[in-house]
Length: 242
Image 1 (cartoon, rainbow, N blue to C red):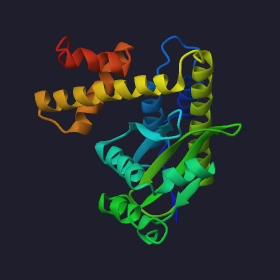
Image 2 (tube, rainbow, N blue to C red):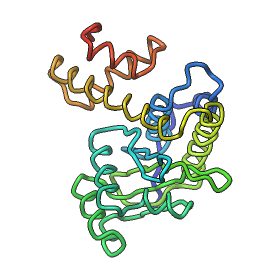
Image 3 (tube, helix red, strand yellow):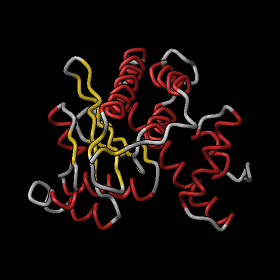
């Protein structure tokens, strides 16, 4: 059964603008963490996905979670890396799309991951590699709350998002090739730690969930034209109250 997305409030020109931002590593404000957040957020707005996560490889090929739309997605992605099985890993290793129509029926393929994801309310998945000319960078994982297959149109959107994000990442790394790849990724991971700390602080201060706190953080960063890391650091340092 096809998984349909609602697009009434998301004109095509909005998607075009996002694709430009994903690929524009020449922008002085380009930031890996912000770009990965934009990628997963857009994936859930323009496809039927209820959650999305992104993993990127370091210089030794180890994968790290660099972005997610919710704590659920982050937990599932971290678990996937920990047990070393799941669609995102398979997509990264093979360089091909891995579509899972029904996760509960995939226990033979992923005996630990499939039931784990199903227990969190995730019923299907669609993993897309981030790769260019044989260079594997990571994978984008889309999750759905019902079984089914993506329409050709939604699959094309997911593919376009991953391809444009890949172009941006490759350009970013090329422009900074004097900087060690591992150092670049470590900087992104450090930024993510600060963001997690800020989410926790906001959650406590406002009495809201972690996901709601992240929505507040993201909304403020975008309205202020600031990087997620910079806003998060201000919150952690108690220089900003939202």
